[in-house]
Image (cartoon, rainbow, N blue to C red; front, side, top):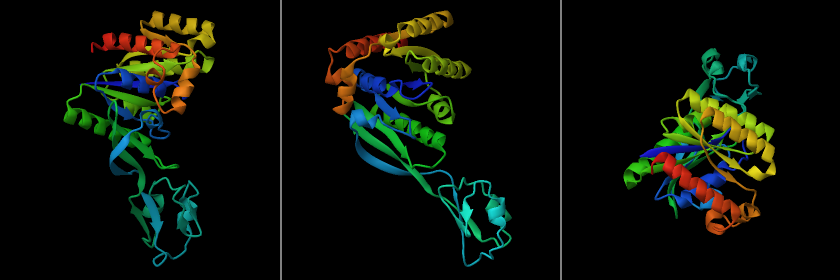
Length: 287
């Protein structure tokens, strides 16, 4: 089994579009959407949910009004302003447990709470593991790990040899969780100054974890000078550029129709470029 994460240093570069197209082009993959804070791979793959499981992340402090002596110590100690009128606001509570430990009346309990849900689903391209974190909740890295574990389990059960991971943007904890034990990573970048800056951060992260990198330049024709800079940087670093995807309105039309563009319009410029990139990536991985 080979696991591949498609990531980007910033949001909006097109990594989910690339992941959806690779899912349609690959031979019996398992799919994992690890962007649990703002998941959207399901929008173009139309998964049918087969199993739902609760995700319990940060615990929540709760004050028992029967035991509370209204001394006010909990409100003084809370650094997140989560306690007002001797009640805990679940949105602001970070689960630090300071109020629980210091309550002289032992009136504050520390209880598990559901912070989101993980799903096992089926798509026309293969089984899919995905999740949704409840708005305002934390521990997204832990939920990403659960999504990854479920994807590997699906691959083991179905005998599939490729897990495609749609990673979160950035370089934080959720991204690190999406990269653990993967065989390779594809960084999707757009030719903007911020895109180039964040690509370099993402590549530094991959280097730190000794993960084999490759790059796809999306909407390369919007700024050919920046595209040349990206290609030059990758060449200097010995990082293969798998493909350059042109700007194509068919990509947006495909998203509106809830399909990968390689399925919606296989002969469009973007589709042809993505198919070529998949061919390069397959050879790169030895699939």
